[in-house]
Image (tube, rainbow over all chains, first blue to last red; front, side, top):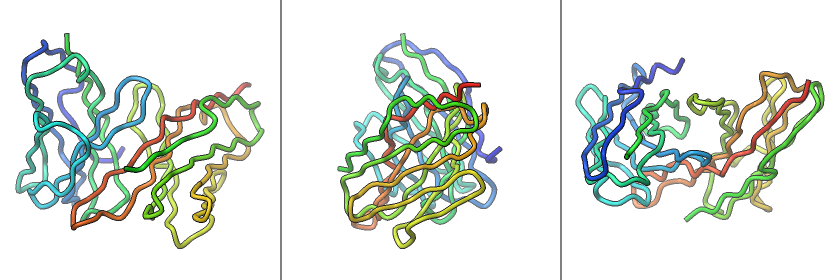
Length: 112
Length: 116
């Protein structure tokens, strides 16, 4: 166990809707990053939050947004859902933007 | 951006034999080289990592070797066991530019099958 928890574990949304996924980082970790993993692929970096600010972003459109709270937990929001957004969304935490990150179990999102 | 290739995509070995997976990357600024193991339906789990100032690192049956000149690093598993069956990902990372962070760039994965 990494101590990184995510919710919900599974959800189904309709195309065009909005979704919010949540992540609690490991105790003592102040950095959270989010990844999208499509079926049969490796995870892709969405963005990273450090001390409540976005600290880096991958090649994802603006409808993917996030927040980090004072307790270092984080949310990933996706607007205007598309079928291709169906994937496993992984949150990972680390301390002080360290390279070594630890993943939670992920949230499975299905868009229909 | 970083281009990452893993070979082979599928590897089947007899229990007790060794397995080697190779990862080639394109960005010479990469300086952190981890390997993750992902079992079906589970999270990626860090199994070993190495930094650019080190050529080799070993942890029990697992080792990673790095060739920065050729821009590749490899995962070596000796005395394979059934529980080693999983998908393995390499995920090199470059030092972030402009103060921003670059995430890990994952390869497409190698499906390792341990035959009893």
